[in-house]
Image (cartoon, rainbow over the protein chains, first blue to last red):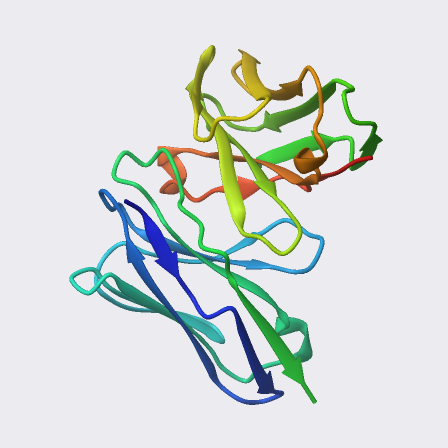
Amino acid sequence: GQNIDQPTEMTATEGAIVQINCTYQTSGFNGLFWYQQHAGEAPTFLSYNVLDGLEEKGRFSSFLSRSKGYSYLLLKELQMKDSASYLCAPLNQAGTALIFGKGTTLSVSS
Amino acid sequence: SQTIHQWPATLVQPVGSPLSLECTVEGTSNPNLYWYRQAAGRGLQLLFYSVGIGQISSEVPQNLSASRPQDRQFILSSKKLLLSDSGFYLCAWSSIRSSYEQYFGPGTRLTVT
């Protein structure tokens, strides 16, 4: 079967660092995406990992371990505008479908 | 550049009425197209995806259907809406040329009353 597991909610303060973990079990794998979704809006792309290791992109980094079925999104120097849901989404082997978890709602306070 | 359009932005429909949501993509050819639904407080649920004209895969049984009459047009329909069809409907596209990153449209918020 297919299963994505992320924490439901996290809180942090401005300027802090937060790590959002994701574990997945999928039938076939062709990479993993992280998306950000603000309330009432469509998801927007943050990062893509297809090989093991860390991908850094400004304040955001994403890590993948394919053997462990594990990924995390690291957000540094948190800002209030980072309050949103963060969606972990493995891509199936055919590249035809992203499998979304329920997402992690991050609340950043001052 | 590529853009994706969805309409309408919001819709209020009575139970038992029909539904038609349209999605069009510009600036790319032969995209994969997707319909997702997000119910309040829930994750994104993949409803349908299409890899070409007339090719539709359904992910969950429901009273919805999808059609792809043209390469860059994807339509979500229902003959009779249920209360449980309320939610945020998102269309998305992807292609191998963009490493299958999915780009989402602005969404349609549907309330069935």
